[in-house]
Amino acid sequence: MTAPAPTRARWLPSRWPADAAGRKNMVLLVQLRWIAIAGQVATILIVHFGMGIRLPVLPMLVVPCIAIGMNIGSLMIVRGRTDISHAELFLALLFDVIALTTQLYLSGGATNPFISLYLVQVALGAMLLHHWSAWGIVVVSAMCAGALAFTYRPLDLSELLEGRLFDLHIVGTWICFVMIAVLLVLFMTRINRNLQDRDTYMAQLRQHAAEEEHIVRMGLLASGAAHELGTPLAQLAVVLGDWRHMPEVTRHPALVEEVVEMQAAVSRCKGILSGILLSAGEARGEAPTVTDVRSFIDGIAQDWRGANPDMPLRCDFGPHDYPRIIADPVIRQAVTNLLDNAREASATYINLMVSRDREWLHIAVRDNGRGFSPDMLVDFGKPYRSSKDRQGSGLGLFLVVNVVRKLGGRVDASNGADGGAMIQLRLPFATLALEEVNDGA
Image (cartoon, rainbow, N blue to C red; front, side):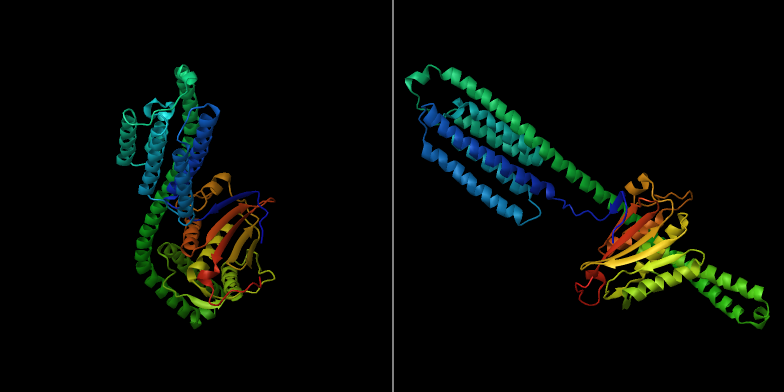
């Protein structure tokens, strides 16, 4: 089933793990290490064979080989996990500091212009690590840089190069500066993006927590309302049932019609109470029943037509076979809420469309009403967001979204190209189906 919708909004629980920033930042460190490996190998070969500065090539090439092993191990860890701990990031940066120290020790120590590359590790530590561990990287880097001023392997320079040592140092310092600037811009912007994604995720968590707190408060209020209103409504329904069969009433068709209307009003009040109780995750104490999808949806449609005889409602199941399901009453109330919203959106007809694939049951309510405003699509599923100008409106969709979320599903909202709106519920068969779902969709 597809929706002719140029404008769409989707509400579903965020699946971005809280520590995904750590995983992404570890990937960035691996990428930076690949660049460092390539740069080290190229520099060693150019300096030794191209410039005639004799370096201990074999020991210096061992360090990139170890770094390659470190990268392979890091990638295997990253692929098998969804989060990376803070300690692992600290150890990765500490390895890079030690590797840089080893290379500098073998190539002139503090006299090597590339000693400023310690600043890259310090900057990364400041961005990625907690306060104490960031200072740990600073301390380790400072100690290593200080030690290289006293302990290092001097460069083996030819007589020709000794006279140009200062010029070579200036050129090396400039190259190091450019490298640091480029690396910081490239990687800091990406790290900032990862941290912003994490902050956005945390903001969503706080929003969800606030909504859950709101639901809990509504649930407590709904429980009190159930105790206060349930018994009087039941008594009123019994009294009206008795009146309907009394001879004094049955002899007057007008009185019979009024009693029927009052019974419908009492039934409507019970339905409203059930809608409020959705916030508590129940529907007036009713237990789930085992049925098939067609019977379940047909029952919802028939009940709604009985309460809204002036509104055309068409059901479309498509050419699908449906499994038997455990029909939770909250699903019935959620679909009823969507039908009520469509009726209140100035629609002249409503389509209730059902389809399925292997994993999901799709239930969509399509109308030809005024549709959703752009602001409504942005805030879809949030409480008290409604186009109806009355106090307390907007809870219907909010409750529907939370019911579907609790069942492991999701809700899509869209506007049709020719007007009207469609809201589609996607419910997982893993939660609903009583039997194994086949591919006969």
